[in-house]
Picture 1 (tube, rainbow, N blue to C red):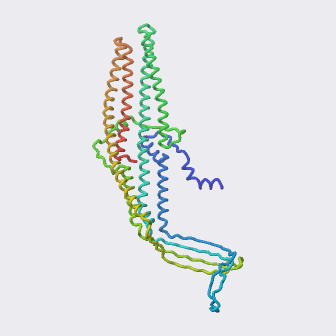
Picture 2 (cartoon, rainbow, N blue to C red):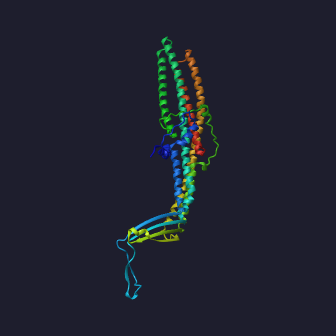
Picture 3 (cartoon, rainbow, N blue to C red):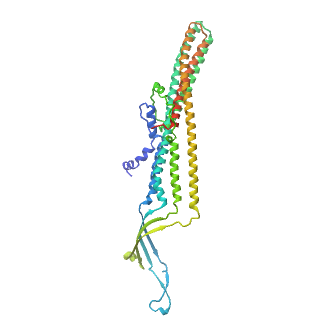
Length: 442
């Protein structure tokens, strides 16, 4: 096969198998989500499942179309069959044994059937709409997972980067403190403990930064996985911290509507399909009706070389009716099973509604708690920064011990870390509330 022709034939398969490459420009959260919805393997598999479901629907409906079959047979009689026939020439002579047929027989036939009514195919036709809905809801469920998980991973990376900025700021302050304390120690203003404490504090800050940097690599890899990005491709992100803070708002008075949840919609679709199964067994006593027609050309001759010289055609058309008279109560037992399965699905809906309500209440409680904690940590950062400035000035004037400077420095850094952790908790909890409400859109 020529290379160009091979490329044209197999290009779609190459496109599906090749790893995806993100744009070189920095991506916002929305752009990351949009990229993931197109390239995440789970979503792509769900879309393939939709296509498979559509093909299965067409298979089920294909029985409504005419079914045409061609046949060809050849037989060589080693011994001709015999029949006992009356002696038509001389009836008084009694019966005679006659060999019937020729040595070679061949039949070329064409048979067509057209289904008029059948319970199986009727169920396939009625179920097509709900099967499409079911596969579509499965894809929706995967997309909701993608939006939620990609957004959380995006927020986690951004807030980790903010923590690195906090550490860089702390390292700059502590490096300056180390230089100042070293200079003071060299001229004999302070003893060695201040200088050593500054060294310890700076080393700890570097160690924390190293740990955070390594953790960020794993978080980058996780986001690439969720987006369907090849691990070797770089991924640049863009964000605005003020915009993140503005995204924390949420209407906590919105009422929970169970029908908006994809899980409830999936169960309702299963209920519809189950009702079709009940109807299938309920009306299983109805007959199947089909029309048929066939045409055969029969060739017979004692000599194989002359077999196809003369044809003896025959044809017929007709109707075929199949009536189930007694099936050993199989239909009734299957009917009862499907009715029990319907009762079980009803209980699944009740249980799902209870789970959704619990999920919503827990997510809302988590959101409110995280929002309150965020407001607290915001005030703590402002107070810790002010305390640090005051103690540092007092230390420079010789009014405070260096240990108090280190303590206030650690308080400031911890409060900044807690603030960003709280910000992530609020954003993640907001996503959980929106998911519980069925408000995740894409």
